[in-house]
Image (cartoon, rainbow, N blue to C red; front, side, top):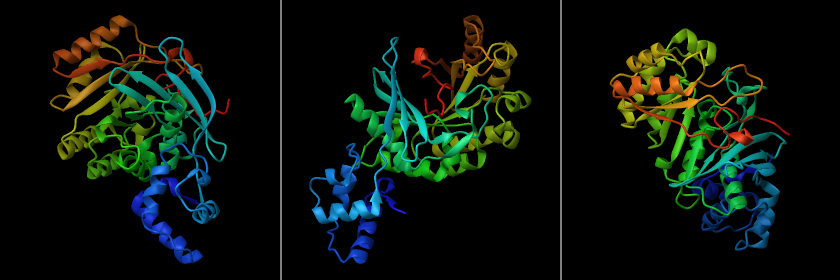
Length: 346
C-alpha cells in the first residue's frame, strides 16, 4: 500500500521522510518536507513535476507514495449565472460533484466529503444510492486545487455542503480543515469555511472541542420531531431537543453563531404554525436561519414553497428577532443547487 502523502501536513511529511530515509539509506534534508507540501497545492499529478527535488528523492516518493488529484470527468457551466458544476473522478473510479460559484466577496467552492451519503434525507439527491465510502483529506483539498487549476482563479471560500455528511467522516474532515487553513498550503481562513451537518449530536460536541472559528450550519428542515423524522431519518437517532441543546452548548463553547438550514417544501413544513414553532425553538439563541426554496429532484415528489408562504415565514421569524435570509439560487439549469448534487458516473 502506497502512502497518501497529500493528506499530510508539514510535520507529518517531515516524519515520513525520516522513515523513508531510514528505510532506503538515502539522506533526506528536513527542509524537503516544506518544499513537498508546497508542491501539493499546485495541481501537480506526479512527483516528477516537483522541480526543486533531487531525482533520487522523486523516484523514492514515486515508489512509496501516491498523488490523488481528482480528474474532471464532466464540467457544466450555467448559462444563467456562470456557476460551474464539476463531476470529479477519484483514483478508484468513484465520482463526486463540486460546485464553483462567483460572488462579490470572492469565489466559493462547495465540496463533497463522502462518495454518496447514508443520511437518507427524503428530499435530497445526494443520498440516492447510499454511501460508497469516505473521502480522504487529500480528496477534499484536491477538489479545491483542481477547480482552481481549471478556472485559473483563487478560491477564497469553502462550503462543506456537497455530497456526504462531514461529521460522519469526522477525522478526515477535521484533518481537511487543518490542511486547507495551513499558511504554507491553500491558506483559506477558517472564517471563510462553512461545515454543514444533518445533526450528528455527539460529533457536534467533538467539533466544539476543536474550536475552529468556522461557520457551523445545521440542516433542520422542521421544528417538529415527528415531521423531521419523516424528512431526515437521522432525527430518529438524534432527537430534536438533544440537537437544539447541542447547538446551544456549541454556541456557549465557541461563541460562534449557528446557521440553521431550512428547505421550504410546499405543503410540508412551510406553514405559519411551522414558522411560529421554529421561532420558539430558537428563541434566545445566537442563530441565523437560511431558508432554501426547495431545489427539486426528479426522483422525489416534493416541490418548493410558493413566494407568499416564504414571505410569511420570513416575517414571523423577523418579528421574533431571528435573523433570516432566503438563499439565492445558483446553477439551477445544471442541477447544481443545494440538495441536487449526487454520486454519479455519467
